[in-house]
Image 1: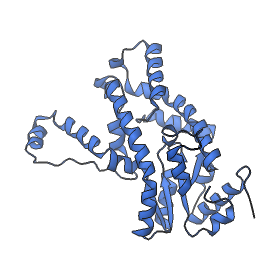
Image 2: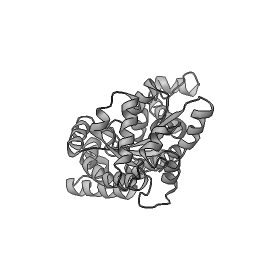
Image 3: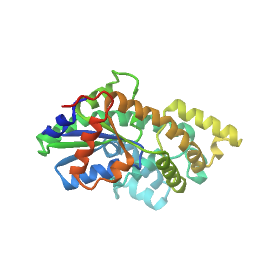
Image 4: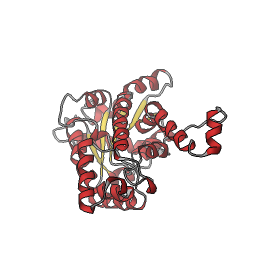
Length: 292
């Protein structure tokens, strides 16, 4: 790790961390607090995915839908209107909408093959956007004159890397420049996230073999052909299995590459100073950690 001891972290003139873990446990909230209340540059991987790497796909999808409306079709073809995505750190719906959900088009679904293709696009975009972290560390310092840097990773980071590989190229680069910090949730947190997801299911990223198995299992269990699958029912069905799939991968990243903090500890933060103290404590309690 780039900070071997709590003292290394406390004394570091340039503090750099990468927050990772399940969506909904405070990654973006914490990064925003550091950005707004102290001299931290906030780099959002999801924002980079949606603007730099998936932006054209997202807007093209808007245009396809607009072309179905005769009034808008004429304006688009005459280049009389401009369609853009208003994606922000706090509003990633344009990206989620593009990823979509597989199933019955009458219920908002898209064909499974199209869904898989968009998943592949997202994987490539997430790898590229995560590796761009190093580029933005340099920009934050040389252009914007920020001393500290927080990378707000995507919830699917663990799906696009191999935590068991000590030479994984993405994790090697990330951990060589920042301290990966896993925000770990409890069973109660998982239950709350599942309740939220059940109320408002949102598109997710899955490793392709896992996705295909999930799709086949769901259709076999319900006896439903692919083009009749209820998109929301399918992704609700897979949420807990996806979380169970991700948790050991998050843990492996933290064990090999970084430190762990609890979701409750993140929720209790009130200031950047609290955050810095929490990271120092996490370094100290890491198994085998050196101390002075």
